[in-house]
Every structure is written in C-alpha cells, then in structure tokens.
Length: 378
Image 1: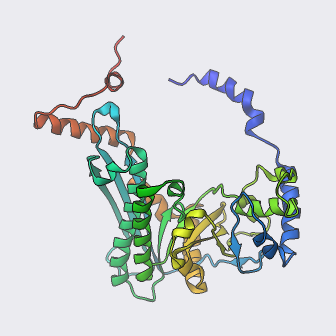
Image 2: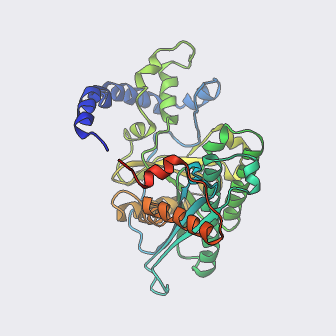
Image 3: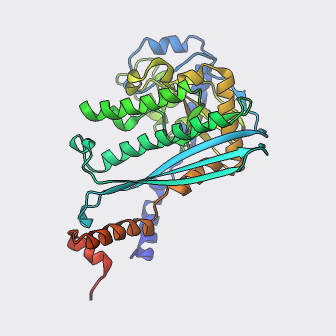
C-alpha cells in the first residue's frame, strides 16, 4: 500500500528537479534555428562533418510550413494496436498472450453496412516456437507483437481496398515508430528474423498501395535539436561546450517555433543506422504536425513521402482524427481499448490455464511469491 503522506514529502523534496526553468534554452535555440533557416548552405556543411548524434536529411526549405486542411467529410481509417501478457515464471508456465485490437471507421459513406468495426484478437503462444531458440522473455513477445500488428493491418487493408471505391481516401495508422529501434542494437538471428518479417509486411502494404503511418504522441526525438547543437558549435563538435545550452529540449520544442495549429513541417529522411537495411522505397521519413492539442511526429515510408498527394492525404486523415479525438486520433484510441489486457483479464488468462491443467490432470508449479499474492495470511 502506498504511503501517500510520505510520498508528498518526497515529491516536495525533489520538486526543483521536476520543474526546471528552461526558458533560457528556448531563447538560445530559437535564435540558432533562425540562423539555420536563413543559411541555404547549412545542409551542405552538415553533410561534410561527422557527428555523434543522429541528424536527418531534407530536400525542401527548412523553415517551410504546410497548412493541413482539417475538414474531411468522406474517408476510411484503419488503426491497429497490440498488448501482451508476458510469460510469468511465478505462474509456472512459459505461455504468453498477444492481443491485437483493430478498428475501422467509415465516414460519410452511407453505402457501408457498418460505420464502425471493432475487433479484439487474442493469440496464445506456448513458448516452444522456433523463435524461442533465438531469444526468450519480453524481447521475443515485443517482437512478435509488432509483427502481428502489421500483419493484422495488412489483412484488413487488403479487404478494405477490395470493398472501397478508389475515390475514398483510406489510411492505416499504428501507434509508434516506423523505425524498428528495438532491433538496431541486436545481432544475428533475432534482427534478421524479425526485420525481414516487418519489411516484408511493409512491402506488401506498398504493393497494395495502402497508405500507412506511425503516429508518435509526445515524441522525445532530438534530430532537429542536433542541428542546433551543430550550429552552436560552428561545425566543430569535439570539445564544444555550447551544445549543452539546449540539453533539455526535444524536437517538438523546435517545431513549436514555426508551426501554427493545423500545419506540418517539411518531410525529413531518417538516418537511423537500421534504416540502411530498409529497401529504398521503405526507408523511414518523418514530419512534425501541430494537431491543435500538441505537436506530434508522423513517420511514413519513402514511397509516401515522395508523393505530395499521398502525403497530404495521410496528414489530413490524421489531423481530422485528432480533432475528433480531442487531441489524439479516435481510431488509435479505440484500437488501444480493444487491445489492452487489464489486470482482471490477465488473472482470467492464468485462471483458464490452471483450470485446463486440472482437467488434464496436470498441475502447474506456482512460486511461493505467486501464492502469497493470491492470499495473505497473518
């Protein structure tokens, strides 16, 4: 049980560290950003130096802003999200659960049989699949979950493309990054197995001309901040102390200098190391967009980034969804609700496993810690 009185005392003690005054960093960053935007040679200078940080590429004027029309009367949006129950050694089983939530929303289409489609699809694994030879535990579950999210998105997208008129704007949204960061530091079989699966699914979306995008709320990325660090150091990184002046800022703070509501930045190409493994048409690109409640990061594959019509369709659907959801896309919020596995659901999962074991005259071996959670004696 939480000692709330002691918690309040602890929070008071660390409050100065919780709420830093970074107004000075904003001023320095804004002045630096303005110098960068006014220097047409900046991108060429950046490309000639080596930095320890991730910096993007871009092909348009850095300070350009593109209004996004929020009104969109007719479109279809698909969103997919996933949740999981990790293997619990205290429950005496390596079994785990992945639950995929899918949502389809049809707007302005009276001919549709249903305006809303909701689905929750649980998938159970015993932990003895071939992947278990490569990696165990949460890492395996997370990789499989992302695979199934993309797979469900592809399945629903193919069916929708067959039903929908080509005149109806349609996009598939998922929560998170198109850059598979969790695989970047991995070696050998794990990276090869799952990255190949992910890229195969993305390639099938490309072949079916399914517009897709990753939505990142409250992003912590610093690619634009890193450009400011380079400018503050005058392109001489080693030993430079000036870069510390913007240590607490993230890219959304920089985008806030120039993005009005309902507008997006130019498109940037991600130079993440793992991006070298993507085929050219799938290389991750991104832009920042002010959806009214916050500035978000949207990630798209190269084939969408290079087509203004496709790019604008994705941006418009996302903005419309965010307005309808009062700051967060309705479809993604509903997909999360379909996917989420709450405490009682988790207990039900293990209860059913236990019951099945009894029926088959097989008993799971519960740890003493697990038994204590079920009933505390005094």
